[in-house]
Structures are given as C-alpha cells and as structure tokens.
Image (cartoon, rainbow, N blue to C red; front, side, top):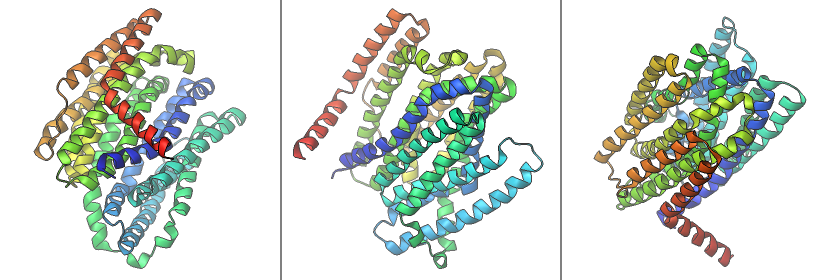
Length: 469
C-alpha cells in the first residue's frame, strides 16, 4: 500500500471513532444550554480547562514519547515490553505524587467537586496514555472503538445525571470522568497491557531518552493551554463565569473543526514519523498539505455560512450572544490546521524544542492582547487574540520549517482562501435570510470546485472498494 493510501486508511478509521465522540458532544449542546445556566456552564468549562492543564504536567508528556518510541519498536516484542513497563512505572509514581499534592492543596483551597475532579484527572491521564499506546501499536481500530465507547458513555451518563438526577454541573463532570474510565478500561484489556508489564525491565537509561523527547513538549503543552483556553481564565476573572459560559458555547462550533484537525493530526503524526526519511518526502508532504488546507478552508467557510441556520436551532436564547464570536474562532482553527501539520513534522524529526519555542511565542501574544483589550471589547478580545496568536505561530513555523522540509503550496491558494473567508464573514454579520442563502450557495460551489480532485479520488476509491467486495 503506498504512503498516501495508508495515510487515508488510517485517517478514515480514526475519523469514524473520533467523529462519533465529537458529534455526540455537539448534539448535547441543546441539553447543556437548556439545563445549565450560563454561570454553571462557565464553571464546568473552566474546570475542564484546568484538567487539560494538569494532565501534561503530571505525565511530562510521556504519552507522546511512548507513541513515538513504540513506532520504532514495532515487531520487536522485547523492546515493546520494556517501553510499556517503563510507561507504567512512571505513571504509578506520577499519579501518586499528584494525588498527595492535590489533596494537600485542596485542604487549604476551596474547590467545588474536588473529589470528582481528582478522579477525572486520574482517568484522563490513563485514557490519554492508553490511546497513544494503541496508536504506537498501530491498533487504529481499537483506538476508534474506544472513542465510540467514550461518546456513548458521555451521552447516557449526561442524560441520566443531568436530566433525571438533576445534578447539573456535577453531573457533567462525573460524565466526563466515567467516559474516560470506560475508554481506559477497554484499551487496557483489549491491548493486553497486563501481559506486557514487567517491572524488572524498567530501564532508567531508556527513561532518560524518553524524557529527553517528551520534556520539551511540556512547555509546549502548557503554552497550547494558554493559547487555547487561558482566555476562559481571563474572562472568568474580569467578565465573570456567565460571560465564560457564552464564550464556551461560541467555541463549541469551531471545536468541531478542531476535532477534525485532531483526527487528521493523529494519522498524520504516524505517517510523518514513518516517512520522514523517505526520498519522496517533500512531494508527499506537499501533497498532503495542499489537500488538507483546501479541505479545511472549505469546511471553515461552510461552517460560517451554515451557522445563521443552525445556531438558532441548537442554542437556547439565553446564549444568543455567542453567535458573534464564532467567525474569528473558526479562522483561528484553520490556522491551527497548518500549525498541527508543521508540528508533526518537527516531532517526526525529534525536534520537540522547536515546537515548544513557537508555541510559547503564541501564548505570550495571546495573553498580552487579551489583558490589554478585554475591558474595551469584551469577548471579542479573547476571540481575536486566539486568531492572531495562531496566525503568528503558523507564519513562524512556515518560514522556519523550510530549513528542513520543502513544502510547496499551490499558487494562489492563500489568496483564494482569504477572499472566500472575507465574503462568508461579511454575509454572516449582515445576517439577512436571503443573503445567508446566497452565501451558502457560493460557499458550496467554492468548496466543490477547490476540492474536486479530492472528492473524485475519494469517490472512486470507495466505489472500487464496494465493487470488489
């Protein structure tokens, strides 16, 4: 199987798993906005934000290291067992230290739902680690099944706890913890990890190599947290939890694109690592970059064009203000697609320090713009700061990466993308029913024409697959 077909196969398998989880989360929005007031939703969103901060600090990003090292050890059972044994050894120590520090701190600081949050962090660490192990083994089907189980658990537990038990905010947090537990438990059993753990194989020299790869990713992870979600902390402190609830709803729609980016990123990271030294690397990487950018630009403007029709149906009127902040967040997500594309090339070359450096720059820009302007333009400051910081990161990596890999984009791609975004955003804010229809038609035509080759290739692949079965 050639590189592009293998990449497509991996992406499709992961897509069906991850999209299930994300679509379920999206379709739960009417439930959340109906049963939780803005302040409650804002508090839950803030808790989720800090959980995403704790996880990379607790693990020192070892899950990314285990994924990368397991790729190199495929077919070498002894090396695989050594890696898994080292992984569990470190996980046990890290989670023990976290637990002790967490309960010491929370005995002095009043944190709502502290016990549930502790469980949520623990299972998030385990599920995140086991998902990367599954990818390292090349078990993309098991990866996808675990994601589907996570999504189904999220739906059932949310409906039961929020609607029938009336637990509101606490019910959401318990649901997140339960979903991650199901994911971790399934992968632990399915991957047969218990048979691969032998603590006599713990190798401190190997651990040192793994941490050499992963530790530079810790500031990168924290910086990503700052770029992505520090907005919520600043909003909550300056504008209040209710404003954060509105902003969290605004983010839910671009998060669909972010999730698709994450799906692409999962398969791309494996392909980039496997083919980083291939003789036709530059051609392959350029082909993927062009296809992905055209596809995500079309999805981005498509989301903006659809939003005037979708938003009133999905969201309770109490959250109507969220409508105004969606376009800049969608644009930020498109920049994030290119950032992720470049990140995995850096990591494939084991240049994790460069990833961290560029992300820290973006984080600083994000905070500065937020703090300066949030009192004057409110939630727009958070949306615009995210967009600008992502653009700077994209531009920096685009220039820097030329020293290592030659990625060539199609002539006029960025100019066409800019023009269609301006067109879609103008009609979005003009917001008349007839202009919204015109915008949707134009955007659909643009999406079809720019992605014609990709759509044709995908259709023919599926057709031949069905025909031969």
